[in-house]
Image 1 (cartoon, rainbow, N blue to C red):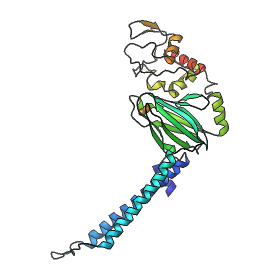
Image 2: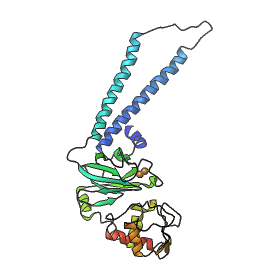
Image 3: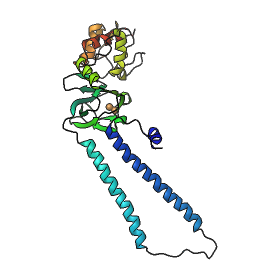
Image 4: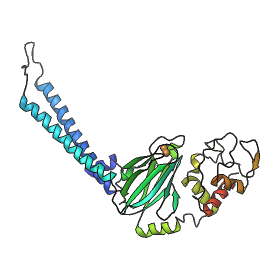
Length: 314
Ligand code: CUA
């Protein structure tokens, strides 16, 4: 009964913390169901039992009943006190990270998640964490308020500019978990998605060493198409010619691009490379200088792949 309801109401439990949140949730849920049935049931029963039976039928006028008042005060009072301590305990579990937790830095910006690991490796929109090990996220934003939300982990925390906020968890469910931005942060807020991979120790260490050597067996343009999505380029750039926050990639390669200062530039490989790594260097006429820099965030092969992908959009 419980697991059936759980699967309908709530996503899978990716952390041990998720289990304690769900227990509290179900306690509140079943308490609500119990009191709903009790009150609605008594209401219906009293309606019939004490209905007016004739013109002279009067109910007795009762002024007070101390015993009843004490009972209906003490029962709810003890219930809410019990819920408060349970909830407080669960909250403190989430708020205080264990001392041995591994720290990962999270930087949010419109509209990507950036992760930096203890060894200096960085990744975008893709967080890799070891199974059954406490991980602490130290988070900040480069622009507006975002919110780090992983439903299967039952964790959610605002990510603020000029401040660090933190979260911690111990992942216990291997595989992929979805990360959402849960604070409206502009045009592509709903595309500000990420994936969290919970790896066993071996896979995790391999990933840390290679920095996630993904796409190593893929042709460049195909790898680039993958990066176009996973690195969040597609939140601002389209490939079908429609206008986004940034220029579309359709037909851009080899064309003469008009810049904000009135000059034009040939869109060759070097122009595209520069626009990825130092987007503020040349702003296309009619667009805002809002693209974040990707300098130091992409490896050489990833840059090549993106250039190759953009070249293919003719
Ligand atoms: Cu970032 Cu919504």
